[in-house]
Amino acid sequence: MKSQFRLDIENGLKNSPKTLPSKYFYDAIGDALFVKIMHLPEYYLTRAEFEIFNTKSKNIISKLEINKDQPFDLIELGAGDGKKTKAFLKVLLDEDYNFKYLPIDISQNALDDLEQSIHKEFLKLNIETIQGNYFGVLNDIKTNTTPKVIMFLGSNLGNLQDHEAQDFLIKLSNALQVGDKVIMGLDTIKPKDVVLPAYNDSQGVTKAFNLNLLNRINNELEADFEIENFDHSPEYNEETGIAKSYLVSKEDQEVTFNGDNIIFKFQKGEKILTEISRKYNDEILNSFLNNTKLKQISKISDSKNYFNSYILERV
Ligand code: AVJ
Image (tube, rainbow, N blue to C red):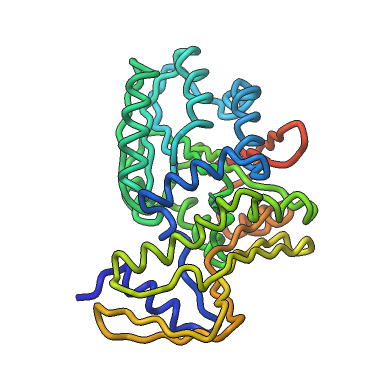
């Protein structure tokens, strides 16, 4: 039987135009490259969101209206290295909130590192890691009535197409009980000269991150992509707020998947869409929340207004 990975990749390459799902960026090499991306001078997103948690966690916590006597679950979707969350956890622990931290990530590798570092830095913290994708996890948390705060940071929602994001928000809303909260970190729509370099850094880390997907396919699906025959090419539309990353074929070429003898043809200049990074404003977020029971109750921004932490309540 074909693995989900193989099915998703082969189906994406049968599409026209060709696509590859960005969730497969994150193997061990992809995880490491993404950590590098978060430290790049051009990649403003992580710094801006970190600034919010580093300077305004108390403000965020006050908006969550948590009763200190009532234990709650702090569930983080796509936790990654947890750098921003740790600034938040520290304030919660200092202020004696009674909670369990449940980071969820697609990468077991990232979760293991996070769990280790959390144990070192926060001796008292009750943590339970969960490997999986967000959609699966939303089903699992539905049955549990412990009050919840869901963290969905890093503008990860931006990786979804608009209809998928709306579908995700409906599922999220349905998985929560009245009064539960969501902390949603979203990149703001801003000019091209700020956004594009974040996806096309001068050191070529983002290019390596994008091309690593082809390496992963070669390694795990016995394909023969010639990595040097593809270029990294990001685009950004200021009006819609949508950034897209492509891999562009530098020549007419064929790639064989030796596992099951499928051949894909690429034309010179042909683009494969590998990632969408949508940016948000209040209006777009609110329109996506329209069909849900989630309401925006607060918005906290960094000093440059590059990034927003939205607090949503399940009403
Ligand atoms: C983690 C999905 C928010 O889209 O900005 C960074 C991933 N891709 N550089 C983003 C990413 C290229 C990132 N997200």
